[in-house]
Image 1 (cartoon, one colour):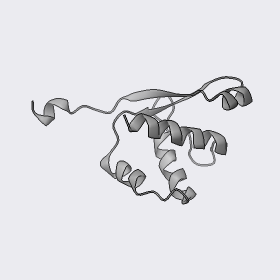
Image 2 (image 1 turned 90 degrees about the vertical axis):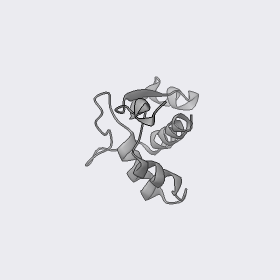
Image 3 (image 1 turned 90 degrees about the horizontal axis):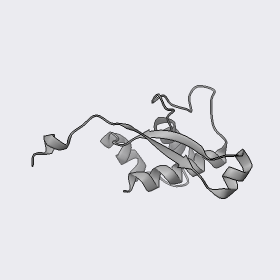
Length: 98
């Protein structure tokens, strides 16, 4: 098989934040979308992140947390509560590690 046979455009996939404490706090499960394939530059940024560099983590999450139309949820003055950003980091890491 040739590698080009496996190439395809990235597709949006839904990720659900379903941690019991967050479901209780926000009243329901919360969902967002990510692309199933990411540019190598994004993978490289993620792999080289220092866990204490919250600004860098936030910048990457702005690129990854998307709505159902593929648009960033975090942009301009729009942001998310820190507990949801943290949960999204965990979920994205779990998903992309598969």
